[in-house]
Image 1 (cartoon, rainbow, N blue to C red):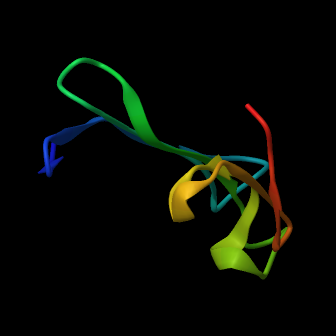
Image 2 (image 1 turned 180 degrees about the vertical axis):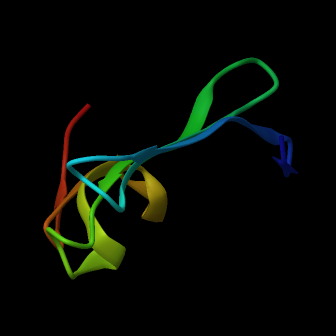
Length: 81
């Protein structure tokens, strides 16, 4: 797994969904400090047949851009965790 400035990507999974959602996938990434603290995460359902915006991301959660937020059909909303 890749390391960046003392953090390590501990989860890097992608599952391609088959019939009836051909071309859809689930993606998950988690980055942690050496002490196990999650500092970056991303979870997304991607299906370009449903959503043509945001690289096909139908629904996703991540904390890039220094705040937790939700992606839904091309719109981004901050969330509280």
